[in-house]
Length: 122
Image (tube, rainbow, N blue to C red):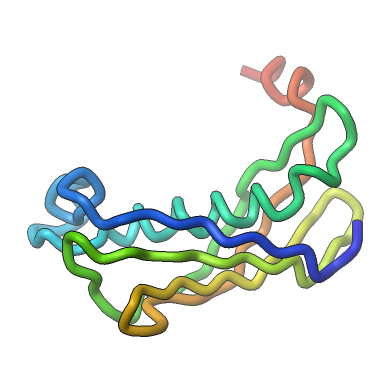
């Protein structure tokens, strides 16, 4: 798989994705778990059109910082760029922004898996 593949996912901060609602804090600001999910979504979408039939990717590791809060009503974007592809292991640089600037960044690793075989392990 070619490095450089990129995708940007977007969301709006609502009552449903605040730290208070998700239980990761007690304030109505964009929750860190929601930020991580948005970053993972961008990485998943960056490579999905390049995968073999019947395959998907699963998240294995994310190391990220959440540097700044985002208020309800704010738009948030996460961009993932594939920086390394080593067999089934895919490494992404992830960055998140709101209208005020960068709010988070990090590294995310995903693995390519066969859907049926993966689900068969349940």
